[in-house]
Length: 185
Image (cartoon, rainbow, N blue to C red; front, side, top):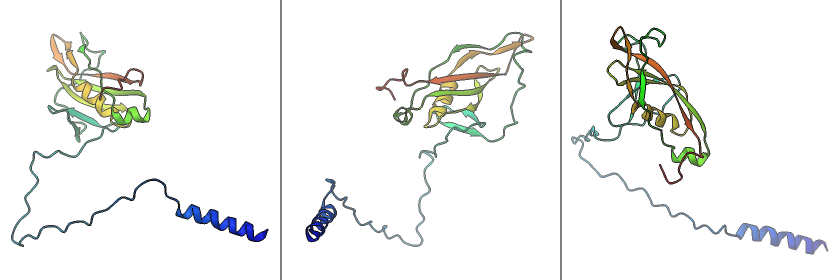
């Protein structure tokens, strides 16, 4: 009886070690050696047309809008070109005429991320977005998409004594999976 039990145990353990998972082994190629160059030859510098490193939106950081849609972090936080007037002190508050909706990212949709991104947006007296500050963000690129949407916002600037002035505005963007399209970006 003991021999049968030992023989059965050996068969079970042996079959487990020799079984296959069904996946094929990945074939790896040996790395190719770099091409031999002369010692006097200099490597070309990367061209300015290459993509810059991605900037991710972080809480309490200021960003400026760029023409190509990328994020540019503003490092000097106190240097604002024009005086900013509080909404209580203006004669006519800024009026938002167009507020585009941000898109979901594939990663956020795949991970089921939902929530709100809260931004403070500096509306300049020249009817352009001067700065965007992340107050509350979401992961997987949703904060960055909210900043890009805020940069496309159109508005009439606030007025004080008949002159356009800059004003901070709080903008909130809702991200709900039910509102996102599985066919969109």
